[in-house]
Each structure stands twice: as structure tokens, then as C-alpha cells.
Amino acid sequence: MSLAKNFRMLSLYNQRINTQLMDCCLTLPSDIIEKETDSFFANIISYWNHILFGDLILLGRLASNEIAQLTLEDFTNFPSPKSPQDIYHSQLSDLAVLRKQLDALIIDYCTNLTEEDCEKFITYTTTEGDSITKAIADVTQHIFNHQTHHRGQLTCVLSQFGVDYGCMDLPVIVSEGSRTE
Image 1 (cartoon, one colour):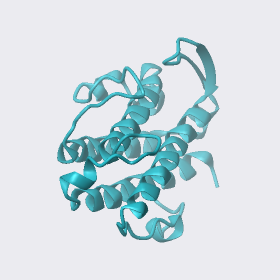
Image 2 (tube, one colour):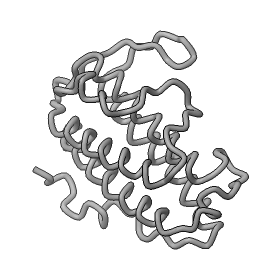
Image 3 (spheres, helix red, strand yellow):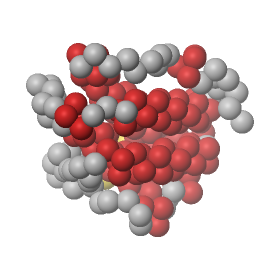
């Protein structure tokens, strides 16, 4: 399977699982949403804000290089990421709107991503001020790895709160697999 097709499949999984988890979280009372998790992030709201931060900063780096037709103009309706601790919204319903819009942008990006794009390199400055050069494929993969990592933490918290968030298996969530075109 080509990298571009794999990323397209991952973008669909990403959107579907984010929708599933967000819909689950939106049913929870505010005392659970704001409850201290004693984990990596203080509460469920902080997890969703951080996942947004990761997407915004990584996609912004790609847009700065106009990869796969992604441009900085695509981000005019999104907040500007500054720090991994950014809080864009304190209401989950507001985060849900941003999440849906950003997931659609990720799908568009992956739909336009080519094998040639995946082989290109970009240089960017990290939030710590270091200059890094990475392959587009590696930056794109990190978008999905970052979300998966923090969704794993979030689902652990949800489990500890007694919340059933449903199946998260890729073959079930994206049953069409890489045949997404």
C-alpha cells in the first residue's frame, strides 16, 4: 500500500474515532468533563485542547510549505497554536466544532497528498526553538501518532470514570480499509 493511501485511510479513522469519542464526551455531565484526572492532562477538556494543538502546529508547518494544497489561508478560522498547554475553549461543544473542521481539513490534506509529497523534506522550528528537518511522510505520520497517543490516555481516563466509549479498532472503524477512493 502506498503511503498516500495509508494516510488517507488514517485520516478517515482519525475523523471517525474523534467523532465517536467527542460524541461520547458530549453526553457527560460537566463535573466529569472538568474532573481532575490525575493523569498527563488535568481534565477531559485539556486532552481535547492538546490534541487540537498538535494538529494545528503540525498542519501549520505543512501549510507553510504548501504541501498537498494546504496553505496558511486554510487556518484563518482556527486559533494560532503557541504552547502544548494552550486552552482554545473551555466548553466541549466549542471544541467539538473546531475538531470537526480540523478533521475535515486533515482529510482534504491526505486526499491531496502524493507519493512525491511524502518524499519531500521541510524545515521548521519547534516550540522549544530548535530547527528540525523532517520528511513530509514523518510529519504526517506524527499527526496520527500524536492523536492516537493522547486518545489512548483519554480513553484510559474515560474507563476510570466508568464511561463506555465503544470500539476503536481500525478494521471496524474504516471497514473499507485503504480502498477509500
